[in-house]
Amino acid sequence: MIGALIGPLTSLVGSWMDQKAEQQRGKQTVARVKAESEAAVLVSAATSTADWEKLMAEGSKSSLKDEFFSVILAAPCILAFCGEWGRTIVAEGFVALEAMPEYYRYFLGCAIAASFSIRGATKFMSRPK
Image (cartoon, rainbow, N blue to C red; front, side, top):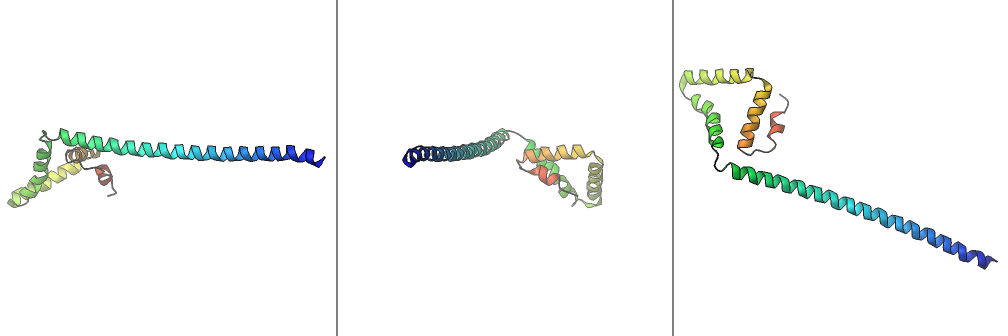
């Protein structure tokens, strides 16, 4: 009689253990697939950023905006050495820039940063004053 119970009981326990092992394999498969998909997203993001930077660099080869912004940024430095009238022009210019709306200064900073391909410039421009 005990022998008649042991066979089905062993079969039941074995079936339960097989089911648990299958569940564990399923969890491992899900974790692996999730990790692979997250890695694919990271690779895609890095590739997109590199492609964008390459496109921007190629587009700026024939552009004069870099030279324009270089002259604009260098002008106050040059005028500062041109006597009192030059320093007055520089001081009044910075006062005028300070009076401009913040969104205009932000857009100007973005245009200059894009011209020189400076990544992360928005973090620099939005720092606390």
